[in-house]
Image 1 (cartoon, helix red, strand yellow):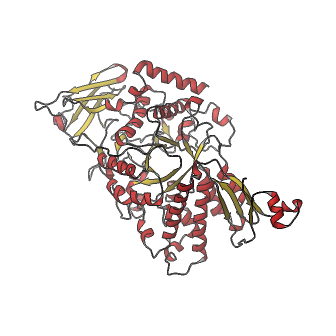
Image 2: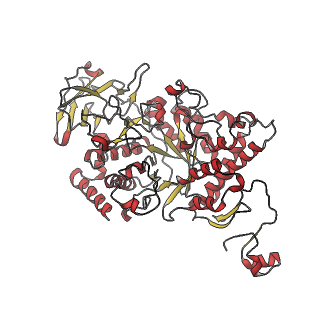
Image 3: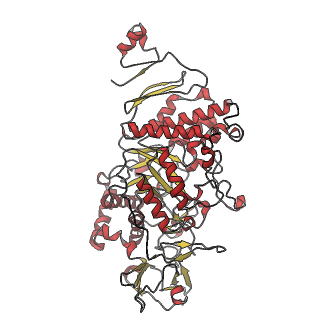
Length: 621
């Protein structure tokens, strides 16, 4: 009730002071540098700590003082530059710009606008340059977004590594080479990582420097718009992995110290810095921060055509301790005590309310490891408003089992418990592994199962060794039981569907800036002489079967068997019966599927008292 009251108060305040959430969240059309239809340019910034603000760049010969902004109320500044005598824009497309901030101590700071739509790092330079993006002919969308999906099968993707070549791959490569592959595999949704511009490639996109700029290392904004449009033509929904939980500490080409102060967009002092991520933390109670973040979401939907978001680092946002060193037991005091950051949770409620109100077809997913109750219930009920949350305990469980237990010690009841331990009124995205498990320092499931033999025994001409045989079968079984039993949606990280043999490591000083591991070797699954193709085909069949029967959109499964000594799990979902035999060496030919106990007696010629001792799989009537 307290949180909903805070949400309602902020929403009403936006209505009263800004003309409504629709107008408030459309601020990306007025802040930054925007073109007027008459050829003039309107510039607006929020820099409450600045003594003066100027615009400089190629257009004025880099004169730092010739174009001063006018000071407005509440720390805002504006500048109008009339069109040239020829009627054209005074700031040409492709020209470089900088905001000049005179700080309180008199220092001149050259900054990139927080609202910049395109930034580029030129060869030989350390920092990014702000490039004015206003092409005479921009990409025009041709296809509508798909309708909101009932069964969500997500292909988690990173454009830069989506090629076997040792280089940063492009939006164009993804559009023409990877999208057809995703469609063929039966995935109906893409989750694009590392799109919001980040100066450090090896951060995997999680140290954002320019929130409104699509990363230029893969191509132009129009290239990204084309990618999304082509995905829509294939009936594929496209989600953005959005990072509103923190920001890069960069000041030359980031948000940090934009106006010369320690605060501005962030909390000042220790509260404004994440001690593990070494990044800045937003002040979600600040009016202009709300404007900035809500407008950011709106821009990605309306300008680029994204169909929703996977919110990164939600646990860090929800708690003042950011979940650092915290083991969440499920005790409700952990979720509703003084450690909850009410301003952050209120922001998430506002974000989901705005998205649902303006674009109800959009989807939002929360990456929350804490299990915050009602995070995926409607805001009107006092919930967080997300459609789904990630079932983050599932991949951890599979790693723990494979890493610590012998095959004969696998606990069927514990596996079932982990896969079904979710609140029935909140939707979960299940996954056996995501990008987190593919990073260097960790191992993918395929690597854990088959390790070095993946380099020597994956040819169809080599004998099927016990390690490869076991690895391929368990890889399939783990994915299928996670897909069918683990949630209301399913996620896979690109390449893992065919058992990608190596981890992921971006070019950095520690590996001599090598691209060797920053690529996905799709050539392995395309090679018909290698066994990777079998895993790829199984993944396709699994998705196609779900597309036909829709178990992800069905009620949770009814588990009929989790037998420890036989290592058998059986359950019914969406009118299908799933039977898994996890025993390392026993096969069964005498399991009978029956509908009732009386059928058990009739089929086995035994008494009712004896029937309960027989291992039978029970279907729902």
